[in-house]
Amino acid sequence: MIDFNRPPFVGKELDYIKEAIENGKLCGDGAFTKKCSEWMQEKFDVRHTFLTTSCTHALEMAAYLCDLEPGDEVIMPSYTFVSTADAFVLRGAKIVFTDIRPDTMNIDEKKIEAAITDRTRVIVPVHYAGVACEMDEIMDIARRHGLKVVEDAAQGVNAFYKGKALGTIGDFGCYSFHETKNYTMGEGGALVFNDDSLQEKAEILREKGTNRSKFFRGQIDKYTWVNYGSSYLPSEMNAAYLYAQLEEAEKIDRKRHEIYDYYNEALRPLAEAGLIGQPFVPDGAKHNAHMYYIKVKDLETRTDLISYMREKGVCCVFHYIPLHTAAAGRRFGRFFGGDEYTTKESERIVRLPMFYNLDMKDVAYTAKCLLEYKGY
Image (cartoon, rainbow, N blue to C red; front, side, top):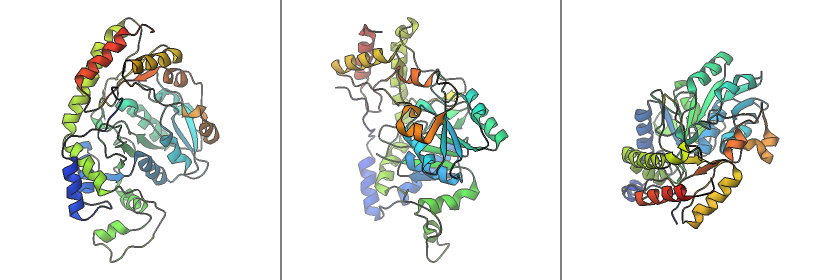
């Protein structure tokens, strides 16, 4: 069976984990955590980077730093992972879901402004498949209405919009280093932002509500509990695994683009015949080959195609069930406007195997099986 995903492994991970152990500090904010943070700050031109135990926790930190109060509203697409909404629900916010664009599967920037009320506080664009939302228009809407923007860039690490790294355009950006992502630490994430005034508040939040970070920098002689916080700090072993991959980010990026480009070219005849849809990347967006998907005509065809591919020894999957259709989505949120594309397009997507160590012979076989399928 050709797996849908396997965590990337570039070679130095075990050496760096051993080094972290020998350094004698495994609880976090050691040498490898600092190296990962510095790499992102330099690569993405962002002032503050906080490595976290997951992108979920990065989103939770961002939601807290937005100073939300119960009853405040947060606008986001329904077509996203549950963590995007959960982080704000935990602060007592009401989620306002809006429709997506059928071409990019991102939030439809044209639908946002009409969804704003006097309780709206935050807009959360989700950069699906590492393809940028229309951030110029979203940021303009946010500025005119005095709203915060939290970019869910879980899939957008090392992807760009008009030369700016995804996650660095809004007030906060949230990355994922889950094992399904381009670069991984097993479970992990990062919160990034540029506002210097929030650094200490973020440090306290991440360090269980203490001023421990200032203590370790020698700025105070003891640390105490000073505010709300939680334990968002990952282990040094996780950071060591991640840093080995960040060092080889260009190599990982090249391989993923090679896979993406092969699928895109090999399957083009199906798209030209009107049998499938292929990913769309707008002008100004530089994607990171996070995933390759095709769109078939409907849910019945998708179910049959995934079953066919499994019989051929290839694991293909679909993605999110729209959040507004779930019990918790109905409890904690509402859908504004018509669901013209969210549900319909979500039922068409089939994701193909995509990971760094995937053999190109398996990529070719996957494409061959798709070309031979007769049920489109």
